[in-house]
Structure formats: C-alpha cells, structure tokens
Amino acid sequence: MNDVPISADERARRQKAIDFARTNIELSGFTLSPGIEALGVRFVAGELSESEYLAAALDHANALPASAPAQDYFTSLEQLEAARPARDRP
Image (cartoon, rainbow, N blue to C red; front, top):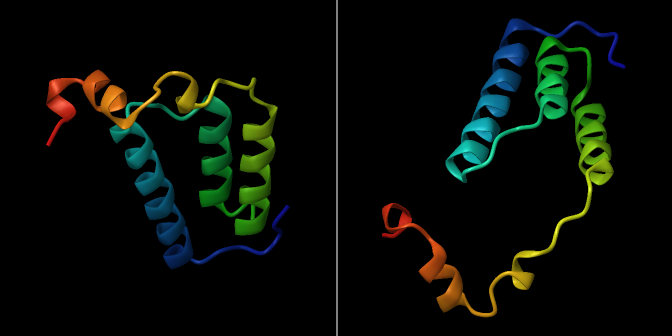
C-alpha cells in the first residue's frame, strides 16, 4: 500500500487514465466490474501505487472464471464482421 500522499496533479492524471480506460471499455460494449471500479478509486485516491494497482487488477482478472476465446465463436473474420450490428460497421 502506498503511504506517500500524491499531488493534485498526480491525482488528476490518475483520474484521467481511469476515465479513459472506463470509456474505452464501455465503447467496446463492456462494463467494469465492481472490483475493478473499487481498485480505480483506491488508485486515484493514492492508496495504491501504479504497480500495486496493475498487480491487483491482474490478480482480479486472473480470479475471474475462464471464458471461451473469440476463436471459439467465429471461424473467420467474415463471420465476425457479419455478426457485428450495422451501427458498429464503418
């Protein structure tokens, strides 16, 4: 755990990084789990260093149940593209 207080600039940088990641995930059609959201809050508050945050996020991800890779659902890029909703196509 990080015992060194962070500056307002560092807090803003961290919040911007967390917001960017969340937006990226949401634009991909997913949501962050409550566990990852809580880690983000702790990281922005300065409770976790960057390396501690990354390690905790990896631990969280590795604890999730395994899912089938995309290759198990689609056998070709054409199939994947055909499955995308029309609004997501260029």
